[in-house]
Length: 323
Image (cartoon, rainbow, N blue to C red):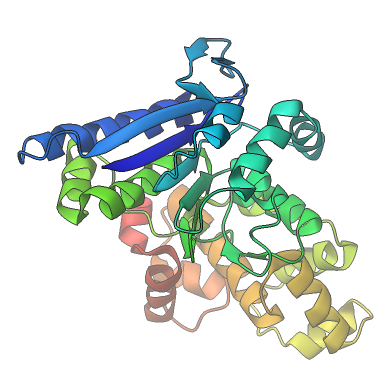
């Protein structure tokens, strides 16, 4: 018997919780069709027996966080659905609530054999435990700058949809909860069941968040990095050397590298490439310009180079971005 324990904090996103439950239940249904009934148990825990969702609906939990600790359930997976936090103030306020402390304690006392999954802003709660120190994670791309500021000891790659590091599985923006749950279904029920779930629920493979980033809304808090973005974006069609960029910003190349990596988690060279690709994807999706013309506009030699990078970084093709 496999056990999945879902931590439903007050204010949990209704859609994220529903995705979690519906995907596991779909897997259960397909699994029972193979003659394997009762192989997966779903338990929902809340701070109290009644949980209020973000939309104000009341959910009856199977147990409280405290009871889950007392009963020593030892779940195979603990899942934390998205919490809908959209700003630094909202994150601070949410993490200051009593049920956060109770959830953090439960996560810290989880068995070493237990795996933990979180998506979107709930990754902030998981990081609060200290368990992610030195680990690689992802979270929703537009909160990346806040995550880095709060957790510099965690390696963040906000371009990826899913990141698995040891017992931890993290996912990107809110609806990447689908990707998270498919991975968990594959782990506890097998890849064939997960494939059936993806087909029947019409879930496409989305290996990267990068294609969904809006370049005008990718935020950082370091003024040097902000200035670097503006200069790069104004000179995308030109060759850009890191030395020249540093000189324009009146800092050393070493200082620029340190600040860019602290703010974005990538090297200056990768940072420039990311700006080119974000702008390219925006043009692909919003204009009828040819790939060759877009490549020239963002500083690539030809369309072939751009196509290869789009496939490598976004996991898709320019034609798919445009459709």
